[in-house]
Amino acid sequence: MAEVAPGIAHQSRDLPNPPKIGGFVSFSSCDYPGQLACVVFLSGCPWRCHYCHNPHLQKRETVPGVPVWAELLGWLEQRRGLLDAVVFCGGEPLAEKHLPAMLRDVKAMGFKAALHTGGAYPARLAHCLPYLDWVGFDVKTGFADYLNVTLVPRSGDPALASLQQVIGSGVAFECRTTIHPQLHDEAALLALGETLAGLGVQDYALQRFRPQGTASPLLGSQPLPAGYPSAATTAALAERFPRFCVRND
Ligand code: SF4
Image (cartoon, rainbow, N blue to C red; front, side, top):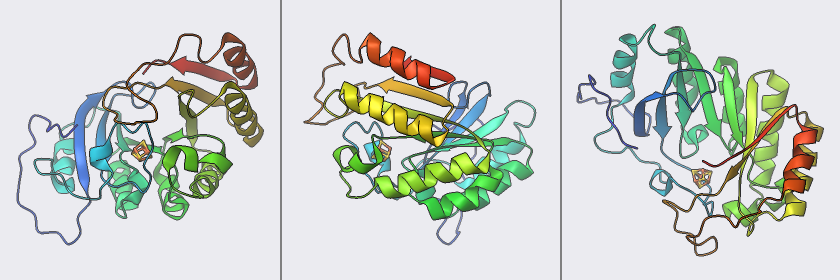
C-alpha cells in the first residue's frame, strides 16, 4: 500500500499539520470506472469494520517512506496527459482536514478527482463535493444497523447524511456494500436494496467478502459459502437498479 512511485524524490518538508498520507499507488485502472488514475491513501478512520482490509490506515498518522503531498503534486506535474484522475481513499479520506484543498490542487492541474468514502464526516464532504467528479460510496448495511458492521454506535446517521448529499449534488457515484452472511442475511440485503433504490441510487454493487488481510473473529478466514447471496436475491436487486453487479473483489 505504501508504494512509492518511480520518479518521486523524497524531500524534507516542515509543514504544520501536513496531510496524513498513508500510501500511494501510481497507476490503477480499477478504482475510478473508465479512468486511468493514481490512488492516494489517507490515514485515519473512526470506524472499525469487521472486514477492514486496511487496519494500518485506521490510525491518523503519516506513514514513513510515503511521499508528502507537495512531492506528489510535483510528480503529478509530470503526469499531465498520461493520467486521467486522482483517487482519494483510505482509511476514511474525509478524516483528512486538508482534503478539500488537495482536491482543489488536483482539479487546478486538470485532473479529474474521485473519492472512496463511507461518509463518516458529512460536513467535510460538503466542502469536497464541488471538486469531485465521481464518488464510490461504501454503504455498510441498513443505516439503523451500522453498529453491527462498524462497531460504532449511530455511525449510520452521518453515512446517510453524506449519501443524501452526494445524491443531491449531481456528482456521478456508485454505492457498494461488502457482504458476509454474518453481517447481512438475504432479507437485510433486499431491505437495503429497497432503501437505496428509494433514495435514488442508480449504480449498486455487492462486493463479496475476501478474508485475505482481515483478522475478524466474527467473519473468520473462510471465503463466502456457495449460494450466498442467493440467485433470487441478486435477481431481485438487479431489478431495482439500472446498473447492478456482484463483484468478487
Ligand atoms: S470504513 Fe473502511 S477503513 Fe474504516 S474501518 Fe471500515 S473498512 Fe476499514
